Image: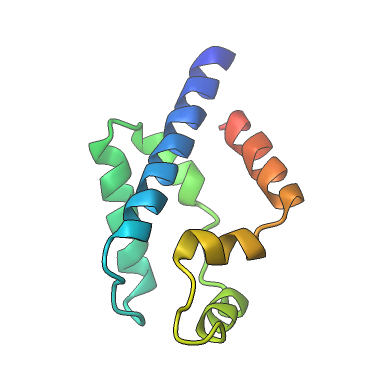
Length: 106
């Protein structure tokens, strides 16, 4: 059972890495869209990758719009950095370790 959970978590992590890379090379999407719709779209993309609905729902259960992240993103000045470069400065090593540990529990 643990191997199945680990495999599901790793697939989910890989999916989001792929989505981040794709997002970095695509033209920037307009800001200010509906957050709930954004999450629904991400869930749909994850489901298209054959991830289990239960895994997807648990992953997004605590997803929330963070005004601090939006403020920092908007204050970076005419979007001089792509998302991956920008997010690397926001996401600490501790957060990445915690995210990996959490994903392994899914």
